[in-house]
Image 1 (spheres, helix red, strand yellow):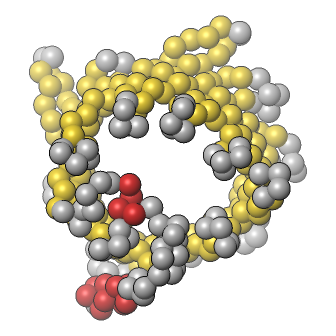
Image 2 (tube, one colour; image 1 turned 90 degrees about the vertical axis):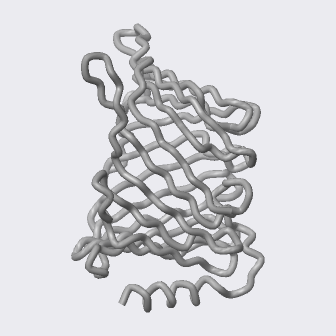
Length: 274
């Protein structure tokens, strides 16, 4: 059954097109056909650090740079799911992803629709008897998007307004409750390379309560993220996250180390098949 499903998906994504909205190979260099990432949790005993496998993912791409499936494994090496399979429209927009259970039955589906600019205008999530949908209504003149989410029975899920700059980078997100009162507001900032490097969180009274700042390296990978909280007008450094990388000759990451408050907590290692 799984083989038949996979063949159907390959047929769905094999048509010729310009794929103008596709992020080819998810931004990886060298056109990899297969990427295997293994994440390890760092455990400490008597100050001795030991890597313990947490999970592994393997992602497969076709020759045009479309991700066609993802396989996921647990810490003991056994499959955690039956995999995720993807299909696209002729412009390279991902229109469907299906996660299967290990017995090849469907666990969940994500369905998406796009406008002529490649913007996602509707998303539908289905899992068993649960279903939810989110619509995005674009005002291109004012660079805003109204986000309306509903549960399967039509009841309230989310309501928000997202604002963009002239390059369509998101700069603000305001979330509302079911009767239209503001719940939170988030401001987004960017560095000179358009990396998203700052967040500011405000409460329903527009009072700043959290913010973060991130610095990126020359490869546009984050190297340090500082998280702050604001309480009684005092600013407190809440968390420091640092990253270290090793790259291959194609400038793809082959090892990423994550430090929380100067303590190594996660390591992810990558293998590429080009």
